[in-house]
Amino acid sequence: MKLIDGRAVAEEIKSSLKIELFELTQNNQRIPTLAAILVGDNPASKAYVNNKVKTCKEIGFNSLLVKLPSDISEADLLKEVERLNNNAEVDGFIVQLPLPKHIDEVKVTLAIDPKKDVDGFHPINFGRMAQGLPCYLPATPYGITLLLKRYNIETAGKHVVVVGRSNIVGTPISILLSRKTEVGDATVTLAHSRTKNLHEITLQADILIAAIGIPGFITEDMVKEGAVVVDVGINRVEDDENTGKSKLVGDVDFDGIKNKSSYITPVPGGVGPMTVMGLIMNTLKAAKKEIYP
Ligand code: BQF
Image (cartoon, rainbow, N blue to C red; front, top):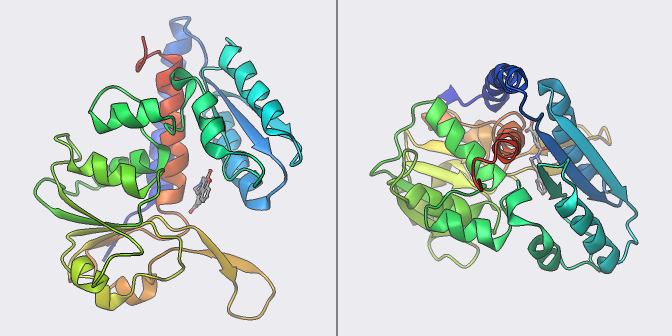
């Protein structure tokens, strides 16, 4: 078993971004600026936004955190989105999900200017991704492709099984890996909660990507000997020892699978840190006007 160390790869990328930022400023180009809208005080959402802001600071990017109360109306949130769309200081921004129940996430996503949509969630960017046009890739799929590349994991001709069909992970990673690209040319099966005989399908996977959101869902009996296992799950569960504390676990039974897989991503420290780097890479592209000149 080889561990895919997302934390280490994220650090490598941070180092190279610091150098690139230095070169940008030498050429009198703008310092990339990321803004984030955080609605309410969900502890997990706060932690995610703080990770993103902290990573910007570490590299030397500018960041702007817009904190809004959980009872903000949808109309007022849409106004804040419009303000960031029109703020020339901001290269790209995100609205941290999930949003409170009274707010329509689709409406908010549609309100973001696709040129500043560094999460890559707007249907314009999704559609451009699906057709292989320049776009902001959704952060988690982007991070997964960076990890596969970094570890020289061949995808061409391989059978990738993705479990989970969300708009932000399962569906876009299945599209990306099936396209005729560097990290692509795979034969992809997209499995989900209504898939029959899931074991039979996952056992065929050369590369298994778990993005279901159920702790420990993928067990040893579902994995082929020598498979590459990518765990996208971030689930907070109670600690075993009755300490009252919680811990992060993935969608994969790591201890059960680690000796059967060729490569495996841990949780924490696997895909999670690379999700943040995907966002950061998109912010750099936004500042350089690489996607939408
Ligand atoms: C790690 C996210 C579910 C719903 C909304 C590093 C992150 C997580 C884990 C992180 C996630 C998950 C993010 C680790 C951002 C990934 O060390 O394993 C970083 O900050 N993430 C998000 O913004 O929204 C989510 C998961």
